[in-house]
Structures are given as structure tokens and as C-alpha cells.
Image 1: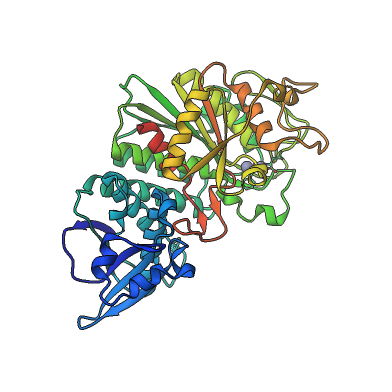
Image 2: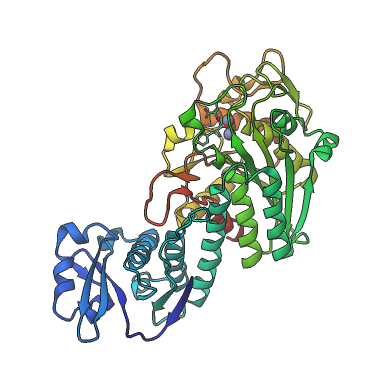
Length: 477
Ligand code: BES
Ligand code: ZN
Ligand code: ZN
């Protein structure tokens, strides 16, 4: 679909109204006082995103009166959400195009073009590859604004498309989106955007000593891959983003119960976000050297599968006692993180991983868990999170937590023994910290934010593409 700016417009149009106050355009379009009445209707106008449609004769033009909520609560994400309401409602009516004046309600021109575009394009995404009957399509949004919003619209389009692409990768069935297929997608993005790409196959991983990735891969009949994508290698500063790419997590011999396994094709959401970020970064540009690292494998069962009780020597030579084969994400990340630190030597590493179910218990699907060893960088990431509404919430990684990951018979163990309860998100991060020597590092646990079982405004069911807008913003800030 397209988003374009127009100075004037004479067709169907969406105008905003606040609780007890009209927007500029609402005043202009309120021919018979109906919109004014709506703004005084508590039920309608206190909650942002409600829409009432008026047919205006003689041209039978439709006016969407869109509630923006209370003026004092209005923020950039409300603008995204209201734009999503307009787009979805217009599409449901079978409209192919509509104009919107909602951007006028946000003072910063660039941001308002960005938010309207993101909210619209993200909300219209549907995973329909396997539907024989496709849904209604919407074609063009015209933004009516006196200011020049071109830059915000163009960047919003790139960010929303990259997010939707990540969603598509996550939504694909696991027997199609294998490690090999992920490598193909990464290659496609690399070729299209002139990125450097290196793909390491199983033989290479054996030579490199990536024994954790190989151990998790043992029960699978698909080969693992380590994928490295690079943008702008000559730049002074380097940021590496590392993604967990478990293309299906059965749990391994510690098999998951059926309900917990239902959505485990999404256990590669961190890796899919890395591919989306690399696409967005190369299309938007930045003066940073950005390296995306993906560890991809299935976590399956077979006679060869990794067993509880096994001890594996990681890439950095630390030994790991495997207590539970379902805590596999931290294993493949251990190799990917120490590889990234040693071989790429970045100034900062950020990892994105669907690491723990416990993250949903702690924060629900509203925010990702954030932990790391560098407060300054985490504070900076928090700012990007608030700006993009891909929220993060920091949990502590104090030295008191570091003891629990030690093993009696190896250097560390991947979980506590005997169903002992532990702070799950923190345990995961405390384990990972063993595979970072000195580089500033942030871990994002996206287990709950990367998948949505319900439709909420511009977040549709299935893969959410969480992290693409957040990290692209962070890298370019
Ligand atoms: N992929 C899961 C985490 C997960 C759970 C992601 C729910 C998305 C939704 C991860 O590999 C896992 O199984 N973690 C275990 C860790 C436990 C064995 C310490 C978990 O969270 O139960
Ligand atoms: Zn698991
Ligand atoms: Zn997993």
C-alpha cells in the first residue's frame, strides 16, 4: 500500500476529536454540530480510537470522526493507534483510499508523519500466504497536513515494512522456515541492500567449536546455521545485534506440553528481528557499523538428541552442565555472544531472544525484559523504547544473582536443579553474562512481546515484529 501527502482533498476523510474539544479539522468538517456532540459524549470520546462515520450529502462523502481521547493523555503512540483504527475501519468498509488529518494533532512534523504511516501500515498486515481466499485490500492513505511530512512518511514506511517482513518470517510454518530457509532470507536481504553476508554451515561450526549450537542441533534432521550480516564496515563505531533463531522449540527430551508447544515456531523471533533491522538500517542509513548475528537451529528429539546431564564445552571454552534441554536458547546464544565479542569486537552487543516464559509472568506482553552490564546504554535504549512504544523494563543483574548459575561439576549449568524456583528472566541473563568478557552488552528477553494471541490496535495476531523499530531507532539515535 501507499501513503502520500496531499495539500487538498475532496473525498472521504478522517478527522480527530478530543474529549470535550475538537481538532482543527474537526471544526472545519463539523457541518451540523454532530462531531461537537460526539466530543461531549463521554463513552465515545474518552477512549482513543473510537470511530463514527457520517455521510455528507450531496457528494455522499464519508467523514470518519475519530476519538483521540483526552487531550492531556494524547501521545505519539495514541496517534499510531488512532491511525490504525482508521485504516482497519476503512478497509472493513471496502474502501480503497481515505484521507486523514490526524497528523495535525502532533507538534513535531517528522514524528507525526512517521506515526500515522507506521500505525496504518502495521495495522493492515495480515498473514495470508496460506489462505486460499484473501481478505479485502486497502490501497492509499492521503495525509492532509500543511507541514512537509515527506521524511516521516518515507521512514515510517521503511520501518513498518521491515516490521511486517519480520512478522511474516515468524508466522511461516516451522517446517518451511528452517535454519536453511532463514539463511536464504538473510541472503536475499543482503543482496537487495548490498550487505556483506557470511553463512557458516555445520562443518564450519564444528571447526569453529560452536559446540552449544551443535549440541542443541543434535536431535534435529535440519542443519544449523550461523549467519553474519554487515552494514557499513568502515564506520568507527560498531554495534552488534545477536538473535536467537530456534526455528522450532519442542523442548528437546524435556519435551514441552502440547499447549506450550503450539506457538514455538516463533522461537526465532529474535533472529527474524535481526533480519528486519538489517533491512531497515540499510534502507534508512546510519554512520554506524552494524553487524547482525543469527544462531539458527531447531530444538528437537531423536536418539541423538542432547540429554540432561550432558556437559558441553562452549565456544569460549567454559563448560556447561545441561540440566534441562528446553533451556536451549541460552546455549546457542552463549556461543553466538562470545563469537561476536571475539571475532567482531563491537563497541556494544544487544541480543534479542525469546528466552523465558517467566518474562510473560514478570511483564506480560507489554514490555521486554532488559538486563545488561552497561547502565548508560540501557538508559539510552529505554529512551528509544518510549519513543517507538516497543517498551522495555529493566531487571537487576546484581552480583548476588551470579552465584546461582554455577554448577557442581562444570563451570555453569543452564538452569537450577530439581525444579528449584529461580527468577527465570534474571537467571537467563546471569547465565549469558558468562559469555561476555568485557564488552558493553544488553539482553532483551522478547518471549512475550514477540508474539500476540490477540489483535490490539496495530499489533495483529501472530508475530509482532517487536524490536525492529526499537533497535533501528536506537542504532540511529
Ligand atoms: N522458547 C522458550 C521460551 C518461551 C516461552 C518463548 C514461551 C516464548 C513463549 C525457551 O526456550 C524455554 O523453553 N524456556 C524455558 C526455560 C526453563 C526450562 C528454565 C521456560 O521458560 O520454561
Ligand atoms: Zn526451550
Ligand atoms: Zn526456546
